[in-house]
Structure formats: structure tokens, C-alpha cells
Image 1 (cartoon, rainbow, N blue to C red):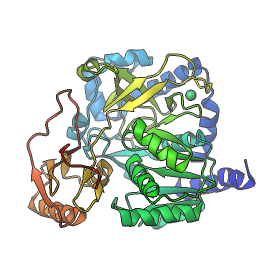
Image 2: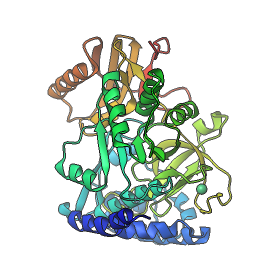
Image 3: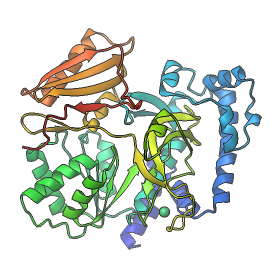
Image 4: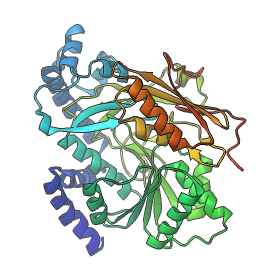
Length: 452
Ligand SMILES: [Zn+2]
């Protein structure tokens, strides 16, 4: 650890915690130790946290209080993770329908942290969390970057689809040695600029969604540039599924390894460990259950559906929450990295097509979910490109939706996608699942080519 890293972790982080009322430093120290716990220590910790959570949810959260009473259960009836099976699986729809009852009554508004998620299924979802829960989530994310060799203070580039408007975030970027590069459009002109900025900044790490990074890699390859990011150590991807061919293409151009990660509301971060043998969930944050269903039984890879219980969010608890994501389990043994976490071989279920407009602009699921996660009038979206110049955005809306919102969305997306495409925003009653029961957010007619 260099002096710079030491100061960033042990001085700047605690000061930043003080300024923002967080406890990230404390949790990072804890997580850096707990990652080498025995399996028994992990289980004991989770079971103890679970008992506290259930007692709190029963006492202070009307939604869970009613649920327990309906089932004639008391929190004491659930002592360990195995007993969770006594409770039903909770869906996003159930929590949305019971929005006010899902909020703990013993928290003041000023102590709540607003959070929003779109997940992979593009069902915008707003909920609250606590400072404590937000702190361990952040610490858990930082620890997962440590697994790729990163240390606080190291220079990194974040390529994002959202621009940085918030002054506090800009200050945090500066303090964290982060070069924030944004483009809300995946088009050549923008990515030439991003490529040049990366080269100029010469970061040790890059963080980005897979598809924009693949786009950049392809551009670099086409222009046959000898890409000079000589200090680059590794790349961190998150967001949608990282397919093997995409991984290979990016790794070849940048000549470093990708460390992929996955997260969802109410769940822990699943990150690839240093050996690349597995993804591991940060089990201090949440309990992950993996169950079989119709989809898993019809898939030759036999994935499991991921059900999560967030051990720290006391504001809007997620207990046996259905993430609607699928994972393939790794071997049931200690990973060669020495950690005793659950082993995950592959993350599935966040698959989505890429759309391509006549002018060559790419549109990915993140373009849409980043916008719709803040549109509370819309419950679910699906984007379909039937012809090269025709894109339809289907919406399932709630009572707050009106013609003004409709007009605003139509105008925004017509401008965003461009005048070479006819964009229709339509309110629908239902968004159909695929024959295997999956929800697809972005669908391109396969006859539309992704290349020139
Ligand atoms: Zn491992």
C-alpha cells in the first residue's frame, strides 16, 4: 500500500464519512477481515442478523407484521436461514402495492436515504434505506474492487451513461481520484473522445457497463490504434450480462482482465474473486437463496433463481425478495482464493438486446432504465425495434400517469433516439414474458444488423 493509498483509506475516507454521515470506513475494515471467515462464522453472523431483522420487521413494519400474523407466525419461529422457508417469497409488485406499509414506522424521514432501482427487468422501483445500510453497501462494493487489485486512492476512470450534475459527486470524484467520463449516447464521435480521455488520463482501472466498453474496444481495433493505457491493471464491469465473447474482445484490446460484478436492490454485491474461479456474494450484507422454478428446469445450464434477504436495510426491509435474476452455481467447496462464500459460476437473467439506429447509434437497456428509474408514474417498460427506423416503448403505468407525462416521455425519447427513427410511446395492459417465463426489456428484430 502506497502512502497515497494509506491516506485515502485511513484519513480521507473517515473524513468523508464524517461529512456525509456514513460509516463506510468502519464497514470496510470489518469486511476486509470477515472475507476470510470460516463458513461457520459466516452462517452464525447471518443467522444473528436475521433474527434481529425479523424482530424489527415484525414490530415496526406493517407489511411484515400483517404477513406474520396471517401466517400465525412469530419472529421467534425463524431462528436460522433454513427457517426462512416458512415465509413466502415477496415480489416487487407486492411491495409496490403496499408502499406505505413497507416503510418502518420507527424511522424519521430525515434518517431515511432515498434509493431507486430499475434492475434488469426495467421495473422502476423507489424505496428507502438507512445510512447504515447504504454504508455497508458502499463498503462492500469497494471491497469487491479490492479483489481486482484496486486500493482507495488509485486513479480510475468511470465511463457512465449519465452526466455528473451534482457538485458533491464532483468533489467526491476529485477526492477519489476518479476521472468521470460521461456520454449519454453510444455513438462514434462521443467514444472517440472517451478513448482519447482514457489514454490521456492513463488510469489504473476502468469501470463501465459491458456494451459501451465493447463499442469502444471495437472502435480502437478498427482504427488499429496501439492503445496506450500503460498503467491499466484491470477493468470492472457491471450492469448487464457479460458474455464470454464480449469479455474476450474487451480483454484483447485493453490487455488486462475484466472483473465483473452484479448487484440488485435488497441484495449483496456478487463480484469475481482474484482467481476468477467464481463470483462471490458479500454474504455479510444479505442472505442469498437459490431456488428452482419453471425457467431453471427448462434451461440446460440449470440456473437458480436468486431470492434475497437484506440484513441491514431496516427502513424498507427486503425479506425473501424475488430479484427475478438467475445464476449458475459453482462447485460446493472452498474457492481457491481461500474465501468460504457461496460460489457462483455465472450470472444470467440480465440478458437484453442492443438496438441500432440507422445513423449507427447503439441503445442498450441501461439507456432506458437509467431514465425510467426516476419516473414514478411508470411501473414497467419494454422497448421493441421492429424495423430499423421504428422503435416502440411500451409502458405499464399506474394511476399517477397522465397525458402530460405521456407527452413529456414521447418528446424526450424522440429527441434522444434521433430524427431518423419514428419513436412511439405506448401504454399497454400487459408485457408478455418469453416462452421460458423471462422478461426481456429491450428486443431487436434479429434481421436488423448491428454492423455497418
Ligand atoms: Zn474465490
